[in-house]
Figure 1: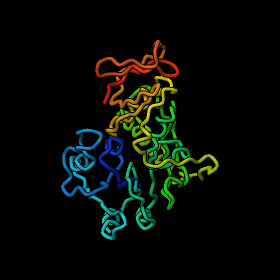
Figure 2: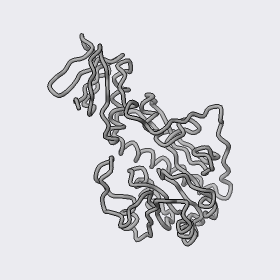
Figure 3: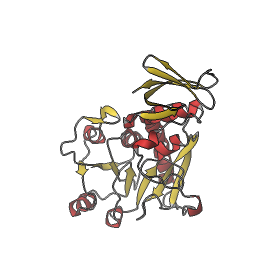
Figure 4: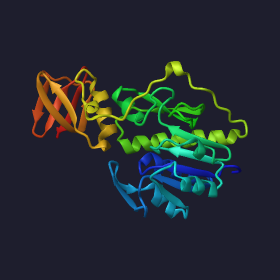
Length: 288
Protein backbone atom coordinates (compact mmCIF):
# COMPACT_ATOMS: atom_id res chain seq x y z
CA UNK A 1 0.00 0.00 0.00
CA UNK A 2 1.20 3.53 -0.75
CA UNK A 3 0.74 6.51 1.52
CA UNK A 4 -0.33 4.38 4.47
CA UNK A 5 2.47 5.05 6.95
CA UNK A 6 0.33 4.88 10.08
CA UNK A 7 1.20 5.73 13.67
CA UNK A 8 -1.24 4.11 16.10
CA UNK A 9 -2.19 5.61 19.46
CA UNK A 10 -3.99 3.31 21.90
CA UNK A 11 -4.08 1.66 25.32
CA UNK A 12 -3.82 -1.87 26.73
CA UNK A 13 -7.54 -2.46 26.05
CA UNK A 14 -8.47 -5.31 23.66
CA UNK A 15 -9.84 -2.77 21.16
CA UNK A 16 -6.40 -1.19 20.61
CA UNK A 17 -4.62 -4.53 20.37
CA UNK A 18 -7.19 -5.92 17.94
CA UNK A 19 -6.97 -2.83 15.73
CA UNK A 20 -3.19 -3.14 15.63
CA UNK A 21 -3.23 -6.85 14.77
CA UNK A 22 -5.73 -6.36 11.96
CA UNK A 23 -3.81 -3.42 10.52
CA UNK A 24 -0.65 -5.52 10.37
CA UNK A 25 -2.45 -8.47 8.77
CA UNK A 26 -3.96 -6.15 6.17
CA UNK A 27 -0.53 -4.93 5.13
CA UNK A 28 -0.85 -1.39 6.49
CA UNK A 29 2.57 0.11 7.17
CA UNK A 30 2.37 0.70 10.92
CA UNK A 31 5.50 2.73 11.66
CA UNK A 32 5.19 3.19 15.45
CA UNK A 33 2.85 2.75 18.40
CA UNK A 34 2.10 5.20 21.18
CA UNK A 35 0.69 3.76 24.41
CA UNK A 36 -1.41 5.90 26.73
CA UNK A 37 0.09 5.98 30.22
CA UNK A 38 3.27 5.55 32.20
CA UNK A 39 4.58 2.15 31.05
CA UNK A 40 8.35 2.66 30.71
CA UNK A 41 9.25 -0.94 29.83
CA UNK A 42 6.05 -2.19 28.15
CA UNK A 43 5.18 -5.40 30.09
CA UNK A 44 4.35 -8.53 28.12
CA UNK A 45 1.01 -8.84 29.85
CA UNK A 46 -1.27 -6.24 31.40
CA UNK A 47 -3.09 -6.74 34.69
CA UNK A 48 -5.91 -4.43 33.64
CA UNK A 49 -9.66 -4.70 34.11
CA UNK A 50 -9.66 -6.70 30.87
CA UNK A 51 -7.62 -9.44 32.53
CA UNK A 52 -4.09 -10.67 31.80
CA UNK A 53 -3.48 -10.35 28.07
CA UNK A 54 -0.82 -9.08 25.71
CA UNK A 55 -0.48 -5.33 25.69
CA UNK A 56 -0.42 -3.14 22.61
CA UNK A 57 3.20 -2.35 23.42
CA UNK A 58 4.21 -6.02 23.52
CA UNK A 59 2.50 -6.66 20.17
CA UNK A 60 4.43 -3.75 18.68
CA UNK A 61 7.65 -5.12 20.16
CA UNK A 62 6.95 -8.54 18.61
CA UNK A 63 6.71 -6.83 15.22
CA UNK A 64 9.97 -4.97 15.82
CA UNK A 65 8.19 -1.61 15.86
CA UNK A 66 9.11 1.39 18.00
CA UNK A 67 6.71 2.21 20.80
CA UNK A 68 6.51 4.94 23.39
CA UNK A 69 4.63 5.42 26.64
CA UNK A 70 2.80 8.74 26.47
CA UNK A 71 1.79 10.15 29.86
CA UNK A 72 1.37 13.62 28.31
CA UNK A 73 0.50 13.76 24.61
CA UNK A 74 0.98 17.56 24.60
CA UNK A 75 4.68 17.30 25.51
CA UNK A 76 7.14 18.66 22.94
CA UNK A 77 9.16 15.44 22.88
CA UNK A 78 6.03 13.48 21.94
CA UNK A 79 5.41 15.71 18.93
CA UNK A 80 9.07 15.37 17.93
CA UNK A 81 8.82 11.58 18.26
CA UNK A 82 5.73 11.48 16.04
CA UNK A 83 7.34 13.73 13.42
CA UNK A 84 10.45 11.54 13.39
CA UNK A 85 8.33 8.68 12.00
CA UNK A 86 6.77 10.87 9.28
CA UNK A 87 3.33 9.23 9.42
CA UNK A 88 0.82 9.74 6.65
CA UNK A 89 -1.89 8.99 9.22
CA UNK A 90 -2.23 9.11 12.97
CA UNK A 91 -4.89 6.57 13.91
CA UNK A 92 -6.41 6.74 17.39
CA UNK A 93 -7.97 3.61 18.89
CA UNK A 94 -9.06 3.99 22.52
CA UNK A 95 -6.50 6.65 23.49
CA UNK A 96 -7.92 8.54 26.47
CA UNK A 97 -6.05 11.84 26.10
CA UNK A 98 -7.33 14.69 23.94
CA UNK A 99 -4.94 15.30 21.07
CA UNK A 100 -3.84 18.93 20.63
CA UNK A 101 -3.93 20.44 17.14
CA UNK A 102 -0.13 20.42 17.01
CA UNK A 103 -0.12 16.62 17.31
CA UNK A 104 -2.88 16.19 14.73
CA UNK A 105 -0.89 18.34 12.32
CA UNK A 106 2.08 15.96 12.65
CA UNK A 107 0.41 13.55 10.21
CA UNK A 108 1.06 14.27 6.55
CA UNK A 109 -2.45 13.32 5.47
CA UNK A 110 -4.84 13.05 8.40
CA UNK A 111 -5.40 12.33 12.07
CA UNK A 112 -8.31 9.92 12.52
CA UNK A 113 -10.17 8.27 15.39
CA UNK A 114 -12.08 4.99 15.55
CA UNK A 115 -15.11 5.46 17.81
CA UNK A 116 -17.35 2.47 18.67
CA UNK A 117 -20.72 4.10 18.06
CA UNK A 118 -22.64 5.57 15.17
CA UNK A 119 -21.62 9.17 15.72
CA UNK A 120 -22.92 11.67 16.54
CA UNK A 121 -24.78 9.37 18.96
CA UNK A 122 -22.94 8.19 22.08
CA UNK A 123 -20.04 10.58 22.08
CA UNK A 124 -17.80 10.35 25.13
CA UNK A 125 -15.26 8.07 26.82
CA UNK A 126 -17.30 4.84 27.22
CA UNK A 127 -19.70 4.47 24.27
CA UNK A 128 -20.03 0.68 24.45
CA UNK A 129 -20.99 0.83 28.12
CA UNK A 130 -23.80 3.31 27.49
CA UNK A 131 -25.12 1.47 24.46
CA UNK A 132 -25.28 -1.77 26.41
CA UNK A 133 -26.97 0.03 29.30
CA UNK A 134 -29.56 1.48 26.91
CA UNK A 135 -30.27 -1.98 25.52
CA UNK A 136 -29.16 -1.16 21.98
CA UNK A 137 -29.19 -4.20 19.70
CA UNK A 138 -27.33 -2.61 16.81
CA UNK A 139 -24.46 -0.18 16.92
CA UNK A 140 -21.58 0.69 14.66
CA UNK A 141 -18.05 1.99 14.33
CA UNK A 142 -17.21 5.47 13.09
CA UNK A 143 -13.96 6.64 11.51
CA UNK A 144 -13.77 10.40 11.90
CA UNK A 145 -11.24 13.19 11.77
CA UNK A 146 -9.93 14.32 15.14
CA UNK A 147 -11.24 17.77 16.05
CA UNK A 148 -10.54 20.11 19.01
CA UNK A 149 -13.89 19.12 20.55
CA UNK A 150 -13.92 15.40 21.35
CA UNK A 151 -15.78 13.07 18.95
CA UNK A 152 -17.13 15.91 16.78
CA UNK A 153 -14.89 15.73 13.70
CA UNK A 154 -16.16 15.03 10.17
CA UNK A 155 -17.18 11.43 9.52
CA UNK A 156 -14.99 9.60 7.00
CA UNK A 157 -16.77 6.24 7.21
CA UNK A 158 -19.22 4.17 9.26
CA UNK A 159 -20.40 0.59 9.35
CA UNK A 160 -23.08 -1.20 11.39
CA UNK A 161 -22.02 -3.67 14.12
CA UNK A 162 -24.27 -6.17 15.95
CA UNK A 163 -24.26 -5.44 19.68
CA UNK A 164 -26.55 -8.29 20.79
CA UNK A 165 -25.67 -11.83 21.83
CA UNK A 166 -24.27 -11.54 25.36
CA UNK A 167 -20.60 -11.29 24.33
CA UNK A 168 -18.05 -10.31 26.96
CA UNK A 169 -16.30 -6.96 26.75
CA UNK A 170 -13.13 -8.22 25.08
CA UNK A 171 -15.05 -10.09 22.38
CA UNK A 172 -17.20 -7.03 21.72
CA UNK A 173 -14.15 -4.79 21.40
CA UNK A 174 -12.53 -7.23 18.98
CA UNK A 175 -15.73 -7.28 16.88
CA UNK A 176 -15.74 -3.48 16.72
CA UNK A 177 -12.02 -3.37 15.96
CA UNK A 178 -12.44 -5.70 12.99
CA UNK A 179 -15.20 -3.48 11.59
CA UNK A 180 -13.17 -0.34 12.26
CA UNK A 181 -10.12 -1.53 10.40
CA UNK A 182 -12.38 -2.48 7.49
CA UNK A 183 -13.64 1.12 7.36
CA UNK A 184 -10.06 2.43 7.52
CA UNK A 185 -9.02 0.18 4.62
CA UNK A 186 -12.01 1.31 2.58
CA UNK A 187 -10.94 4.90 3.18
CA UNK A 188 -7.40 4.12 2.01
CA UNK A 189 -8.76 2.53 -1.16
CA UNK A 190 -10.53 5.81 -2.01
CA UNK A 191 -7.47 8.03 -1.64
CA UNK A 192 -7.05 10.81 -2.57
CA UNK A 193 -10.84 11.22 -2.70
CA UNK A 194 -11.72 10.17 0.85
CA UNK A 195 -13.77 13.21 1.79
CA UNK A 196 -15.69 13.30 5.05
CA UNK A 197 -18.99 14.92 5.98
CA UNK A 198 -19.97 16.97 9.05
CA UNK A 199 -21.81 15.31 11.92
CA UNK A 200 -25.49 16.16 12.39
CA UNK A 201 -25.42 18.02 15.70
CA UNK A 202 -29.18 17.72 16.11
CA UNK A 203 -28.71 13.94 16.54
CA UNK A 204 -25.77 14.21 18.96
CA UNK A 205 -25.64 12.72 22.44
CA UNK A 206 -22.79 12.61 24.96
CA UNK A 207 -22.29 10.42 28.03
CA UNK A 208 -19.62 10.73 30.76
CA UNK A 209 -17.44 8.11 32.37
CA UNK A 210 -19.78 5.71 34.25
CA UNK A 211 -20.26 5.97 38.00
CA UNK A 212 -20.91 3.03 40.33
CA UNK A 213 -24.64 3.80 40.28
CA UNK A 214 -24.71 3.49 36.48
CA UNK A 215 -24.19 -0.26 36.89
CA UNK A 216 -27.61 -0.61 38.56
CA UNK A 217 -29.88 -3.29 37.06
CA UNK A 218 -33.53 -2.37 36.52
CA UNK A 219 -36.03 -5.26 36.93
CA UNK A 220 -38.16 -3.37 34.41
CA UNK A 221 -35.67 -4.31 31.70
CA UNK A 222 -36.12 -7.52 29.77
CA UNK A 223 -33.84 -10.32 30.96
CA UNK A 224 -31.83 -10.31 27.72
CA UNK A 225 -31.08 -6.61 28.13
CA UNK A 226 -29.78 -7.15 31.68
CA UNK A 227 -27.78 -10.22 30.65
CA UNK A 228 -26.11 -8.48 27.69
CA UNK A 229 -25.32 -5.42 29.82
CA UNK A 230 -23.73 -7.45 32.61
CA UNK A 231 -21.76 -9.65 30.23
CA UNK A 232 -20.49 -6.75 28.16
CA UNK A 233 -19.40 -4.63 31.12
CA UNK A 234 -18.11 -7.31 33.53
CA UNK A 235 -14.48 -6.34 32.81
CA UNK A 236 -15.06 -3.05 34.64
CA UNK A 237 -15.01 -5.06 37.87
CA UNK A 238 -18.01 -3.27 39.37
CA UNK A 239 -20.91 -4.93 41.26
CA UNK A 240 -24.41 -4.49 39.88
CA UNK A 241 -26.92 -3.13 42.43
CA UNK A 242 -30.56 -4.16 42.09
CA UNK A 243 -33.53 -3.49 44.35
CA UNK A 244 -36.57 -5.76 44.25
CA UNK A 245 -39.63 -5.30 46.45
CA UNK A 246 -37.57 -3.36 49.00
CA UNK A 247 -34.76 -5.95 49.03
CA UNK A 248 -31.32 -4.70 47.93
CA UNK A 249 -28.79 -7.05 46.31
CA UNK A 250 -25.38 -6.71 44.71
CA UNK A 251 -24.85 -8.93 41.67
CA UNK A 252 -21.44 -10.01 40.45
CA UNK A 253 -21.77 -11.96 37.21
CA UNK A 254 -24.53 -12.86 34.76
CA UNK A 255 -24.95 -16.64 34.67
CA UNK A 256 -27.92 -17.27 32.38
CA UNK A 257 -30.86 -15.66 30.67
CA UNK A 258 -34.20 -17.34 30.01
CA UNK A 259 -35.91 -14.85 27.71
CA UNK A 260 -39.17 -16.78 27.68
CA UNK A 261 -39.07 -17.92 31.29
CA UNK A 262 -41.35 -16.95 34.13
CA UNK A 263 -41.01 -16.76 37.89
CA UNK A 264 -43.95 -16.84 40.31
CA UNK A 265 -42.21 -14.43 42.72
CA UNK A 266 -40.21 -11.23 41.99
CA UNK A 267 -36.92 -12.90 42.97
CA UNK A 268 -35.55 -16.15 44.27
CA UNK A 269 -32.23 -16.70 46.08
CA UNK A 270 -30.59 -19.98 45.09
CA UNK A 271 -27.42 -20.47 47.15
CA UNK A 272 -24.98 -17.77 46.01
CA UNK A 273 -27.13 -16.82 43.02
CA UNK A 274 -30.23 -14.73 42.44
CA UNK A 275 -33.00 -15.44 39.95
CA UNK A 276 -34.67 -12.18 39.01
CA UNK A 277 -38.04 -11.80 37.33
CA UNK A 278 -37.67 -9.11 34.68
CA UNK A 279 -40.21 -7.30 32.55
CA UNK A 280 -39.90 -10.32 30.27
CA UNK A 281 -37.85 -13.38 31.04
CA UNK A 282 -35.71 -14.40 34.01
CA UNK A 283 -32.11 -13.41 34.73
CA UNK A 284 -29.83 -15.59 36.85
CA UNK A 285 -26.74 -13.91 38.32
CA UNK A 286 -24.23 -14.64 41.05
CA UNK A 287 -24.36 -12.55 44.22
CA UNK A 288 -21.40 -10.33 45.09
